Structures are given as structure tokens and as C-alpha cells.
Length: 408
Image (cartoon, rainbow, N blue to C red):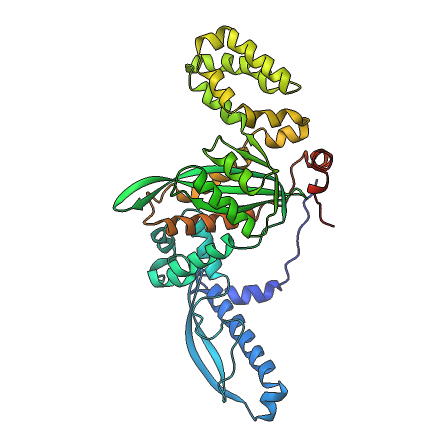
């Protein structure tokens, strides 16, 4: 099949004239033809902005007019550009393309922040861009600027939330952070909420300073203060003190233990060669048709070969049985959604790509800033609902009735 050729918008004769005498090694650099074109286009746009400014009735009646230009060096992704910024007699012209006190070309900050959020250090970012980028430039772009980055993170952490979430996943990410002179492996908890229309969002990030229910009570209270009045199902990884804390704030919420985490914990008792057979022996427990059938299968497993060989597995399941049982009240579409916290673990794997070459962070705030920056780009890709959402939505509406509210 023949490929379709796109027609160039530029006359080849014009391009030939522009390229005449140009060094092929520098034509795409800021010192070559590309830089000259960018400079000419930018100055043409700036002069057009000045014409519009002077044509305004207020400026025209005041007798305002042009007053030459001033040289200004701005940074772009290809290097520095020397621009002639037009001036007006009354000093009221503030161009939109390159505003007053702005030293970077449009889009420069966003590109630098995107590189930093994807795991590059400030030294890595400076390297390919030459000596024109200084640490101060990166700070002003929002990379090294602690206050600006922290302010963005706080705004995201304090934003209003939806009143009802059908599902909320909670799980921890381990991050090395310096604390009181020592590097500690701290737990950074993330929460993903799925609203009643099936769309996901990161609800917040919390670094654990206290153990158990006290910490989770603070998290639940924060979610409620930000506008969430109900959570239908919370999926967790056997987090200590979580069921008590969430029930005290959201008394109707169903707390579901991640089945996959239970299986992984069970596998820790067996050797590597035995794990496949052990997983097959446990499969009838979590695929049972109901809670009573699952309890019978667990008793059968306990009396069988694997239950007798590894006696710690069944007591571990029974200690969390109250958080396992809700799983069996739903059909396959909802079970698919609450079977595992893989949704948040997938998010963790993306965040780890940004933090794995950082060694450790100097403070909690530095860690939160980079994690929020990386989440900003990850969450932007979440545009689709789960494949099984249509069937699951019907079951949510039946099971939870008026609590499951879908917007117009």
C-alpha cells in the first residue's frame, strides 16, 4: 500500500535560499539557522503585540508610542537567544510571549520539570544543555525551588475531593529519607480513589510518623475534611489499625484485604520449588462461590498435606478473615477490581523510576515534592475506566443503593 506524502507548507525555493551557506553541523542549533528563525519569529510576534497594545484607546488617547527596544537574553531548550524587546514611551507594555522579568522561552520550565520528574537529577539536566544552565535557572524553573515545588504539592494534597468513592486503594512505598542525622527507610502511603463514574485519581500522599490506628485516623479525617463523605470499599494490604480507623470515620465502608498479598505472604513459608503447588492448593479458598464455601475450603486445606506442612498459613488467613469475607459477596466483575491492590502497585513502580537514582532524600518535604511531580505526569495518562466497569457499576448500584451516586 502506497504511503501518503504530506505536502510541505514551505516553498522549496525559500528553504534552499535559507539553507544556502549554512553549516550542516550548526543549522539546528540556537547559534545556527534554527536559532535565527526562532529569534526572527519571536521578535515579529513581540512587535505585533506592541502594535495591538498601542492601538488600545487608553494608550492612543494618552499619546503612547514606541520607544526603541532593549536587548534581552532568554533561555530556550536549544540554548540562549538574544531578543530585541520593543518598548513603549510610558513603560506599560508587558508582552505575553516573553513577560517582564521572564528569562526563559515559553515551554522551557515545563520541559525541565518533566525531565526532573522522570528521574533525572539537576546535574543530569544541566549536562546536555551546556554551560548556559546554572543551578539558579533550574531552581527558578521549579526543579531546585523548594518553596515552589512544596507549594504545588500542598495545593494538590489539600484540593477538594469527590463526595463518594466506589473504591479506594491504600498501599505503602518505601523511600530512604534522612531523619535526625540517619537515613531511614520510611513508608510513604498513597491512596488511589475510583469515583462512581469509574475514573481514577491519586487522593493523597502521607509519610507515616506514628504507628497503627492513630496514623490512619488522621488520614481518614483528612479525606473527610476535604469533602469525601463516603467510601464504599477500601482495599488494603493488612495495614495495622486501618479497619478500626476507617470504620470510626466512615462507618459503612467495607474493608477488603488484598487477596494477592495474602497469597504472597503464604508463599513465604514455602521453598521456591513448592510455591506453584502451594498456590494451586490455596486457589479453591479464594475462588469459592461464597463465604461459607471458602471457609470449608480453608478447613480442607488445613487438614491436607500443605496445611499440615506449613501450619502458620491458615492462622494467618483466619486472623484477617473478617476483611477477606466481603470479597465473596460480589460477582466476578467487582472481584476483579478488589482482588488486588495492583492498581496502586503499578503506580508505585512508575514512581520508583523517578526516585531510584536519588539515593536518599534530605527531608520528607523533598521526597513529597518529587513524588508529586512524578504523579503529575503519571495521572495525566489515566483517561480510561477499567474494562469491567460497566458490569461492576450495575452491581455497585444494587449492593449499595443510594450510597452509589453517579453524576449526570
